[in-house]
Length: 119
Picture (cartoon, rainbow, N blue to C red):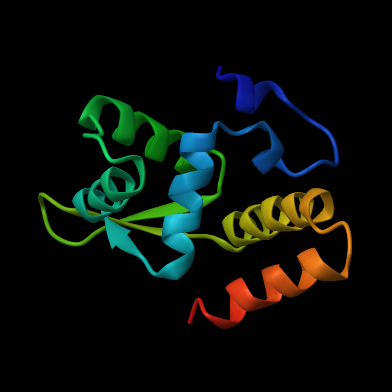
């Protein structure tokens, strides 16, 4: 049993995930993807190769936790999508981060600018 699976209570499970796992959730918040597309997004973010042996066990754990759904695109390719609980986990992480970062009107304006320029 992983550390994330051993935590219980009312707090979002996202608070117990690794940064890598949270990054996977954030990537999947945009749209469902197959494993290699997720790998490429992570590699772009980290600026380094992401090993299959790291990616797929983490995806499997997120599936086991009910945060990601895995479906078969074809016999060799799986697609991963965020569940409603996974989306709530992403929002919980954003809310917690903002509660620590936004300490006044100036910072709120900076965050607003980021959001407005993100889409």
